[in-house]
Image 1 (cartoon, helix red, strand yellow):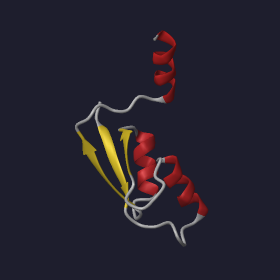
Image 2 (cartoon, helix red, strand yellow):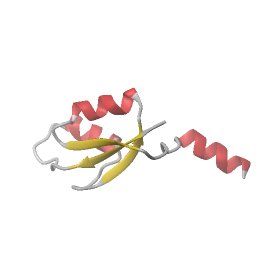
Image 3 (tube, one colour):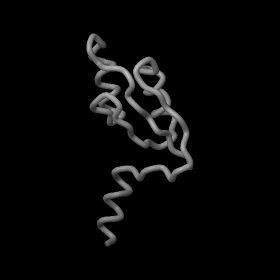
Length: 77
């Protein structure tokens, strides 16, 4: 499964609160911050809502594990 690299390229000043919440949900905090996210329809929908604030590209990295998968891995270790 592929991954998506998202970068915040515009500031959040003057943006509606919904857009700020979406950017926070993507894990982006400051200008020029980047995050590698799994390539899912939910992620692409969030990116579509704030496409004027972010840039994104598909990368050839393994997708990051979700929270449940990380917890399951810790329980086995």
